[in-house]
Amino acid sequence: MELIPVYLAFILILAIFLGFELISKVPATLHTPLMSGANAISGITIVGALLTGGAGGPSWLATLLGATAVFFATVNVVGGYLVTDRMLGMFKKRTDDAP
Image (cartoon, rainbow, N blue to C red; front, side):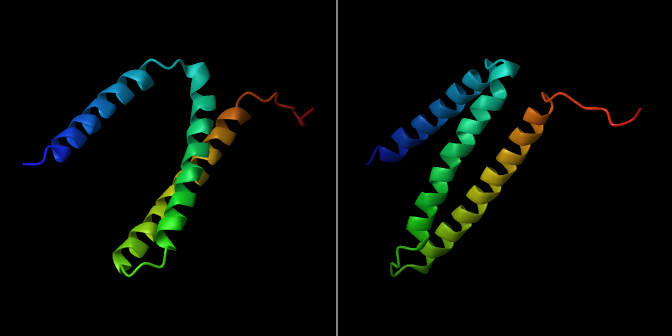
């Protein structure tokens, strides 16, 4: 009996709990810079998905999964940068054009 699935499930559950604890302790002032960093890391996911989808292997499933990963990672990156830009816009000084 192989224990690899058990170890992988344990690592997944541990990562979920650890991620929840770490994210809940982040102050609001650090949220925007950390999300910008996470968006940059998600850009690396796009590169990996492009390599997987364009590997030209015999499996059409790998190409389909790679294309799906490219789509979702692109949505994540674009949406993340839009939210970050909007949040940073809240800190800009407003100029009133009305007299």
